[in-house]
Image (tube, rainbow, N blue to C red):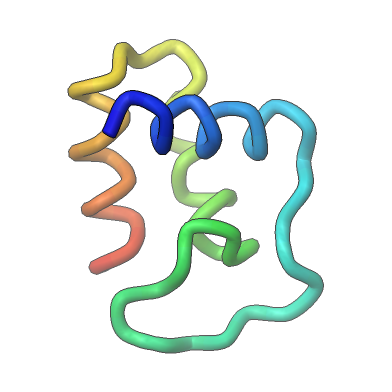
Length: 61
């Protein structure tokens, strides 16, 4: 799972997200809404365990 968190962290840093939100439940990890929520939560400063919980919360909302 650490590899997945690295991918999420990389996509947040680079700003590569989908163009439009799919509005599925749960939202996908490349959704612009999820990326915005993670940036608001300061996800780039979090460790892997905290990032995993922040990602789950951002996808669930």
